[in-house]
Image (cartoon, rainbow over all chains, first blue to last red; front, side, top):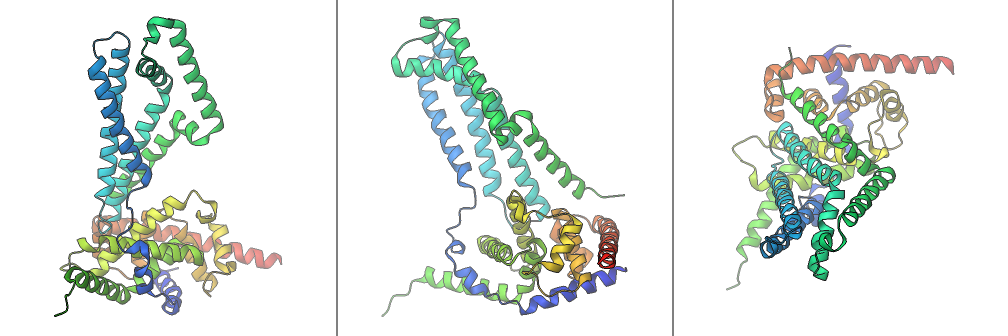
Length: 207
Length: 187
């Protein structure tokens, strides 16, 4: 089959579309088209706002308890992680908010994939370190809510119990929830990286 | 003297201009929607998505540039995002060549098309999103320069990739024909 035949075939198929009834004015008049569209998924804004609140709360708490043993250290680590997550979510929202659909599909897909990689990487790190983060949160929470240093009061067994609880929850989550399992195993990150490689191959001149 | 809401008038004029441009280039939206979505419901969904994307980006459209090039970009971007988002749903996932060939012939939603057109559409639908965009632009009659401009790659790259995709399409169509003749022979 010759190339011209392919074009002729395609266009004969498209000729039937000339009679497809579509009223663009009706499509444009729908609510979604009148500027009420949310271009960025609600989840990403929610994550950004949650991270900003975490940074504010942990920042204030860390400032007040910086010199206290155990609690000060745990709060500082949590604060540092919250700052990193906030930066990552700002980056994602900025990448997606500035997408111009009038740009080339290659450029748009690369931006989407880069933002996705940042999201998946930060989700994976948080998930894989969640037993440790949970323990640090329990230390800070015990002091903030009940006013006592749990490490001093209960010692190493309490820390190990919390680490164990976090680990068991993570393992159960990964066993029963496929998205969690993919994140922990690195499959989601591998998928996003494969997409970026595919886009790079498309952009690169072939020999 | 009656008061005129100038921003409202401007917005209405802008929307009217947008709809007029869209109507004048309706085939672009229809062609892309039909190339990326199979069922009537999916096509309507995708067309709505393209129109919404176009309206949202219309403020950034530079009238000094060709509207068709801009609309192709918006339509392809919307379609690729739509396909990737909806690929989680089995009903919208691109099936393999054989399944697509069968669907193209037997899908009650499909337009009345002959076997060869159905085979070509099925083979195109089985391509990855960006190669599919490239071949759609070519089959719609765009020049290499226009395709390069729309997709953001070099003309040489367009030519090389097109050559490979066309070879792939030819063999996919031949395979579908053979499968159909075998199937008919067995009946």
